[in-house]
Image 1 (cartoon, rainbow, N blue to C red):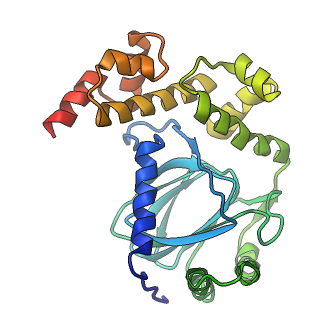
Image 2: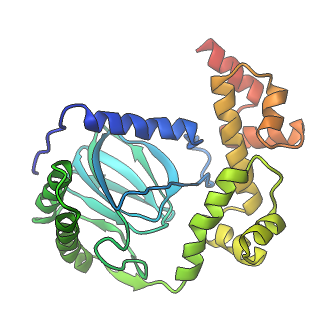
Length: 292
């Protein structure tokens, strides 16, 4: 396996930012007993980005970028579209646009992460793999580490694009690809989730979302049930509970104030949703925070 040196503290700073986003964008860790989705849409503006992460655990999220993960050492569990995979050293996975995925460290590990816009090397919106994992391959680890090095050296985007195409040229034939017919529907996902990210503290329901975005409420409901396996209402409540979780951690505001500041219209619904999400009541959680 080629080795990659972490240059100065840049990658560590990126990883710290990665962790900060988990807390302050309400990307919260889930109890192992809770398998229902608390998914977030992650905005990435760069056409290409890469870094190395150590002992990465990251909750369920999705983004428009294609993401390549390669294990440099150890093992990691990746969930992609509801399927769990365990990757070992040299294994890689390709996560396509708007595929819900999460990471969970199962032993010490280091992984290389590469993100690029789906249009960066060519159109990748219309196909997804049945199985996104590629076992350790003779050529791909070297190609990916070279691509990472080129990025760190701030080389021209044209060279990154060409090298990304070379990587995909070797990787995609190893995957069983299938055509997807829901491109238009998939394109709606970032629009819907971005709106919810801004307005989840307000009164929001399917009728409101449909009117504001000009999308049928039946399509919105189907996207949540078929793509995310969660109801629209449960998704909104999950966002509000995550926001309350952050306030309980970072402020001394009364629990009652936090409930209403987080978008809940009654204490009863707040306590019910919070306990479902975290396994304990808000008061129990706050006592635990102060004890720790």
